[in-house]
Amino acid sequence: MQSGEAPASMEVETSSNGLGTHIGSFLLPPKPKFEPLKAHEMSDGRVQFRKVSVPPHRYSPLKKAWMEIYTPIYEQMKIDIRMNLKARKVELKTRSDTPDVSNLQKCTDFVHAFMLGFDVIDAIALLRLDELYVESFEIKDVKTLRGEHLSRAIGRLSGKGGKTKFAIENATKTRIVIADTKIHILGSFQNIKIARDSLCSLILGSPAGKVYSKLRQVTARLAERF
Image (cartoon, rainbow, N blue to C red; front, side, top):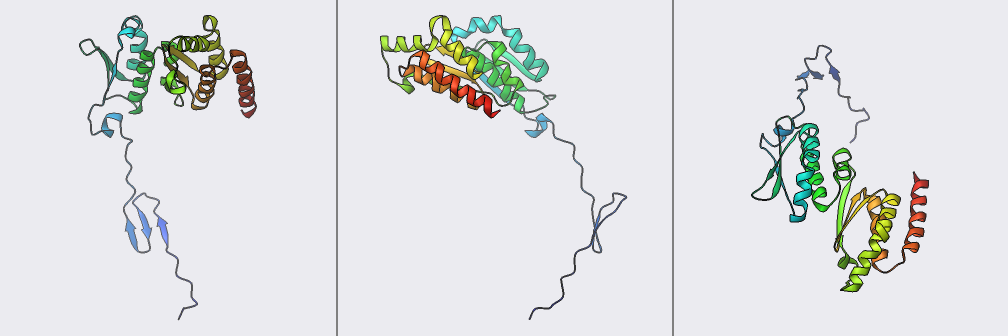
């Protein structure tokens, strides 16, 4: 048999002196106030490491651009960086004053992008912006080509004096590196997709003019959306 009376509501009172919260006749202790954890405290004080291998053909460019890479990583991102000459690797680790643990991964992505062949001025965007990625694929992933057919496909991707590559970069706001049969694209997720589709069309044999007109349509549609 159900009673017609409504259940009594719980009385909650917060004391103004900050001693705690009253629930009925009980006094709960005040909420604890914790300071936000620092980066080195999140991993129980353990130092986090990353290593990036240096390919032989990027050793000389790394020597020349070392200070341009070192300065933003050490001074702005507060990450320690050194070149291990014996192992031929760039080593990065967190410090006690590193403001954010994610800085270590950002710096690793930045150094890795440089090793893939991107300029420092382009790769440094990985430190500044969160929505940037590097995507890599090979020509054989799109179509199996050999001999002169492969050489012609690489030529179609670059164009005369790099004209086609620059046109795709400017239209999609990405940066592209064509290293033999490997292709690396740096940009936001959506822009990488547009650039990749254009490059795949060129590999499959589409003439550059057809790819340009399709790019214009896609970029115009994107401009309308934003």
